[in-house]
Length: 133
Image (tube, rainbow, N blue to C red; front, top):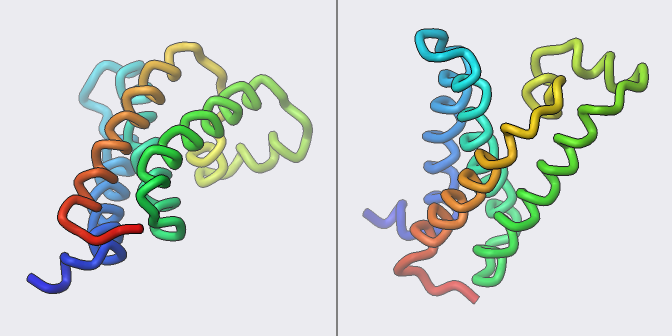
């Protein structure tokens, strides 16, 4: 299938899979409550890895993107300890809570590492069999 030989289309297809799965999982309420919140971090990491790869698709970015996503999301996690009025206002919206979170927890970090690792594997699968610089 020629459509899936393109890195761009493979990445878009991957985003079309991970985004709804992640959003649906964040609203799935038939599991243990803490597990719903924490495992969502895996989908969050994979999404950002794929999204960044849409714009920076190089062989080096396959390992650099997951690393940077891990660093940035870890910083965002620590930023949840900070509550200036502007961030409180952003977090009052659903999209604000989804993007930057609202409560710091150490339990998120293992899932960030797992998500970045899976994001790295996913990017490797996307570039497999393609000619990438």
